[in-house]
Length: 95
Length: 95
Length: 153
Length: 153
Image (tube, rainbow over all chains, first blue to last red; front, side, top):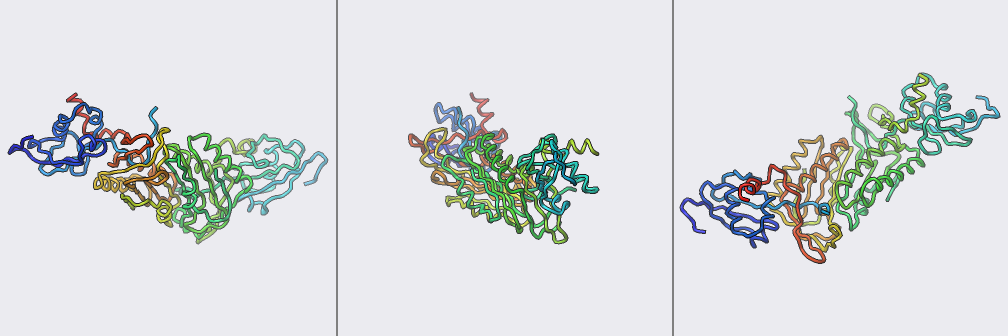
């Protein structure tokens, strides 16, 4: 992706299944000035094929706090893509 | 209390405040043949004065099982008078 | 199922470890300990006494009923008697289960039911006096005195 | 307040004993341990990973919120990371309180909320394969992707 003068750079972090999907734990990403969480997700989503499930229940943290889709990003932000968490012990069986 | 030919003897056990009230942990008691838990409680109650509070919330166990007022007693039964229990830890403050 | 009633110190930590099994995902513990006060009144120590034979059998009935009512694997239910100092455990409940919801539900049901139905009483020795602790009312089905009261008062 | 996230074994029994205070009447513990199976599928071990800085700060927020929401005295919240064997503790919650109701309520709220909001994931290593465990859905207020999904699908 070319970098324009009006782009800014954020650091994207992948966890859980997303880390496997993108085959890396984090990467710098150039996004348009004024980009939101939603814009960024769309950009990333466009780079993968057919993995719709993982995108459905995703949460995003910006600088280590949960952030809604309309959140505006800034140069240097840490943007983490978080699949549904599964700490604690194992959950119930789905039957 | 005189013992009649038709009386039977049960063993009465006192716990908690009742043990203090009767000033002993247990005693044999002669009750009429066919006496119920209720009859027995009435007999005992007649022996004490003004201690109405303790009788209100009493439970009775016959031979180590909770028994209702209509339960009929038999010769040799173990009849325990139980004030409200307070096992576990201390309860809430009543304010 | 482990049910005990006696004067020995309850080894909470050890019971917790011993209750864990390989099919368990959740262990819920209730450890009831002697507070240094009741409603601000300073406690020196407590003295627990029981209708021992009945209390132990009631505890066994409760533990067995918990195993029937809730999808849990195992239960420990221990109550101590005699003189207990501040900070010591009077009652310990441990429930082991595959899933946490049942473990919490069973543990809470056990302590709530024990406190209303198991014949154990305590004398509170305060800095300024001694009293039998007020118990919670018996559940309706085991109040023997109700009809007596209504008939004779 | 004791909040820890790391690879060291969680000493459940020790934390339980250390959390007891003289004003406490009730201690409620949730000890989450690694089961030997998930829905009948045999587990070899689990591998927990976290967004560590965020997970730890979220755990601190939860513990502090529990102390505000419930009338309790103290909270311990420990989660382990890395490879865990069957029977080992992955999460430990201990709540100490004067009364039992609050201790139970806070303990359960903590594990339920932790499991939905603290960024920790686990890979289940089964005898016949490896999968990321399916998490519970995020609470509505933190699902970032909802509008994206609706707009772009």
